[in-house]
Structures are given as C-alpha cells and as structure tokens.
Length: 435
Image 1 (spheres, rainbow, N blue to C red):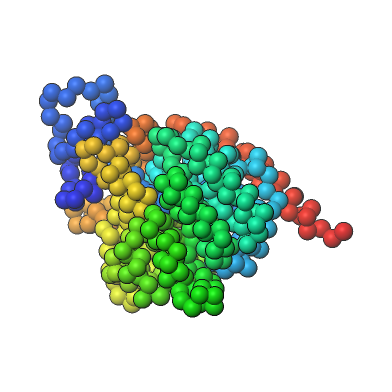
Image 2 (cartoon, rainbow, N blue to C red):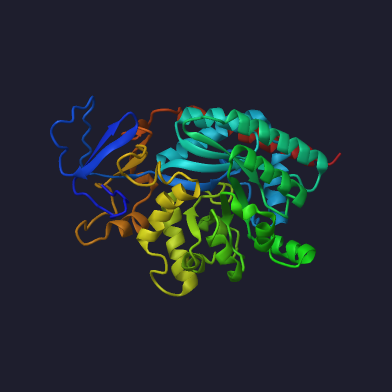
C-alpha cells in the first residue's frame, strides 16, 4: 500500500478500513481485531494507492480524436482550424456518449478525479454523475470580444454554477478558455465577479505560445501575469494548463497565489511546443499538477503514461537525469492535483478521514520485477501503466472491479460515439462543400 501520507509510508502488506465512504484507519499487516466489517476484501498481488487526479482535460473532445493531426493546438490558428471549426458543426446530442467514453477511459487507467473545461455542461454533468467520478467542471467561455457572445456565455455559466451547488462529488468552476486571447478584459472582469459570487475557481489555458504576453505588452506595457495580478485574477483559485512561456520573473507572483500550473507533456510535445519550465517553477514554489489535455491532442487518458513522459521530458530538456524524481512526478498526479482543486483535505493520499478514492494495480503483470531491487515510485512512473489497474473506487463506491466497469456500459457508449463521429464528419463535409 502506497499511502502518500506526510511520512510517505509504504505498507507491505497494508490494510484499509472504510466506513461510509471514508477512510477510517490505515495500517501495516492484517487489520486489528475489534473492527467488524460488512465486507472483507482481500487483494493479494495488488498495489493499493490513491487514485490519480487529471487536472486538465476536455472530456467531450474524444469526439475529435484523430482529427487534429498536423496542427499545433497551442496556437490560435491551429486551435481554430483543428478544434473550433469542428465545434461549429457539433450537435449537442453527441456530447453524452463522448463524455461517457472519456470517463470510462479515465476510470480504466486509474484516474478517480478530473478537472474539465468545456461548454454544453447540461450534457456533460449527467454523464459524469453516472460515472461516479469526482470532478471539477468548468463552464468553458470563448467570447472573442463579441458583446453578444459574452452576455450569452456568462449567463450560461451563471446558470451552470447555480445548478452545481451542493453536489457531493462535482464542483462548478468557470473556464475562460484563454485570458487576453479569446476572453477580453471586459469578460475577465465579469468572470471574476461571478467567481466571487459562487466561490468558484478559474480553469484556463496560459502561455502556450506567448500570445497573452504579446497582447499585454502592447496594450498595458507589461506581462500577462503582471496584468492578471493588477486585475486581481491571482487572488482566486486557478488551474492553468501548459504555462510554457511564462517569464521567469513572473514565477514568484504565481507561487504566492492559489495558482497551479498543470503540465500536459504529451500535448506539448505533439504540438511541437517548447518544454515547460518545470524545474524553474518547482524551484520558485509554484504549485504543479498533471493533466492529459484533450485526447485530440494527446491522444490518451492514461496518466501513468503522462507521468513517464513528463519525467523524461524534464530530464531531456534540462540535460540531466532525475531533473524530476519519480516520487515528485507521482505526487503531482495525486496530491498536486488535489491541492490544485482545493481538495487536499479530501483526496490525494490514503489517510484517516479522507474520502476512499483509490485504485489497485496488478503486481503480477510485467514491469514490477525485481520487486526488492526496484524503487516503487520508479516502477510506477517508468514501468507500470494504466492497463495495470484492476480496480477503482470513489467515495467508497466501486467504479471498476476485477477488470469490469460497474457504473458505465462502455461498449454501448463506444457504439454511440462511433455513430456520432461519423455524423460529425458528414456535417463538416457538408459545410465545406463548394456551392
């Protein structure tokens, strides 16, 4: 049992007592006498650990998987051509099967909590609720300086936040796609007011190609982070995907705020973008988390693969082995994500009082041997993968057990997704046919 508690305990063997969806006690060896349980479950040959936290994705965009090849989604032009143009012919009826497939893939590969940013939340929320996953769902806002679009998007975001109050597993966030790129200063001011009213966090993209800094230098005479600080943006909880081109001088301001930079290494590399300044951010004290980004740009939800990619990218870009240790990487994908979402007292480690959000991996599969000579963190980051996961639980409820989905019908969702994808291709072709 890998606890990731403050002492970093690894229990061989370990036991966990769960009551009403929460962890009651954790220890080494068999559970002590005097703890009657309704269900005794033995997991021989398994590693038990906290579920992973995917701190940045767009779950409906599995519908676009394979359609963004040859485009950099880290530029406005690439994003518009490879994503936004498909979204313009999107039928909301296609959202639910796409989200269901995304949730199934995350569960299957060890993610138990994710942060999403998209629109059509009326279709996303029911699908996520059925999955049983924990999630921070951000209503995505793209207004491109259009007052009509701004009013419409902010009204929809407000209604969404109202509907999300008091959900036990889902929290409502605000998702400005990118400040100063497709969210104007006028929209930002209203988004901040909405965040204050609902106590909501902000989920954004930041510094993928320097567009924000170029805009802010031209209009305000300083960097995007400095302008965000001036506007009071940095006083709100925020997760920011990518953060590739942030000037090093701006890192202390981010470290002093409830801000988390979410690394998405596969998406970064597939877009031909620069490596994120991970080591510099870590040294400055910036909170760090891990995400998959959308699977049109990744193309996988397997966060174990993201761990491996991130650690290798850090060593490669820094020119030295171990630039990011295996343990540091794993903590980014668990406690780092939990802190980014304000859930560190609830998830991210196996400790008494926390929610029972956990996964089990099969130690009899390839990659673990030799078990005595190989550091467990190293094995998890460099040898294991999401397909080693055999079981997944959220709040004491099994979502995946003995290799089978409990809450979702994956084959049925895939069949619906295939049909929706074919209709999407037809709709785009019809729009682009010459008259």
